[in-house]
Length: 234
Image (cartoon, rainbow, N blue to C red; front, top):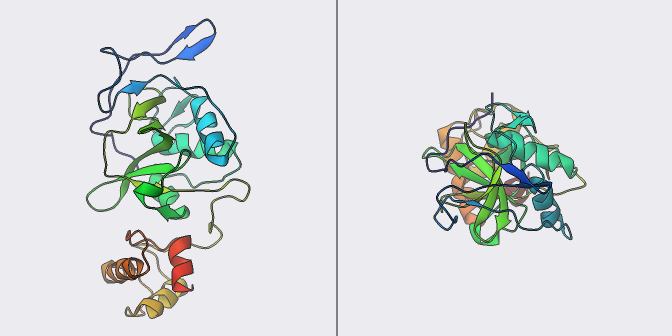
């Protein structure tokens, strides 16, 4: 099952209608200037990789939210992101946490249209995600009763990931190491960061990883993905 919880502040909105053959999203309560409002879709362009992702994301405006959904018949948040990236040649894992772990992480001020935006809870687990569209908006499939839409980003508590087209998610051939991981790869990591080499990625190992990430100027999320691997020489 996908890791996903209802976005507490995500708005509900009216069902889409088709006007002159063009699918449009209607907002409720007038213009969508308020945080979390649903925006009308801008013209789609695909001159760069990020533009291509955003253009593909816009094709599914109006498709319904469905818990566990992975197709235009119904999407949950991670199913939507996975499906969009598949259309541009990037194979992503299924759930929000798996997708976050599979791609390089960037700081918020480095985000570009086409990047994935992940919302973490207080424990660091990812509970929601969408695709950054630029100008403080994102494409997202929010929760039951809504449809895929372009929405104003309503929170500053988000993480950024970037996959690349043509070669799948960078570093996806190597296992991502995080809480719960076990085995020789964890032992090698623990020796590299000065943790007890017991082969069990527990809270103490995660703390050591976070420290190492801060030393190397990386996002301190405690997950050993491609950028952390490279920084640690793994």
